[in-house]
Length: 220
Image (cartoon, rainbow, N blue to C red):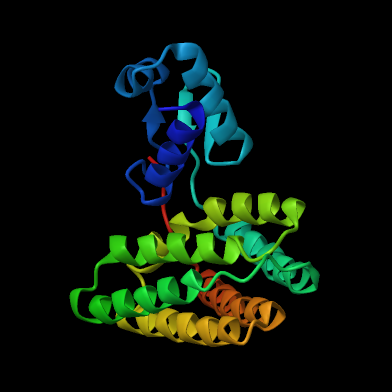
């Protein structure tokens, strides 16, 4: 595996809560697991830290960062603004295969209405992000949006313990269906606007949790 492959795998584990907030990561053990020396493993951890997913603390080692409601709300507000930028950016060439992927995601949502699989919900969100991520040629926007998405991705696992998952799945399916229809007519600006609307819904839910004095996760 390359350093980038290991970085992506580590990021995936953090976002799917395989490494929960507060988890201590051991550089030596990780290097052994991935079959690399500690120097490239250290580079991977530094990149994860740069992107806000872990934190190196003197005397405490490397720790997966916690989820803070205020910070999460701030991230979603910025992501909403990035959708405005996406709508104004030059779109990438149309890829007909994307529509088939969107239909597959809709079908996976249908299955979740019955099995309430939280991990599958997260996987669908990750795949949807990758699709939306590929709709623009604005490289700066891509980097910022990707970083903020993965900083906030863990939020959904935690939120699903507090809300009716069926409602969340139905909302996600509705969004995917609307996004697919906008892509069918090739209107990326409309696509960005639709996604921005659903991000706004998340902000509203965060506000409701905040008003209740709730927290998503308390690190040990």
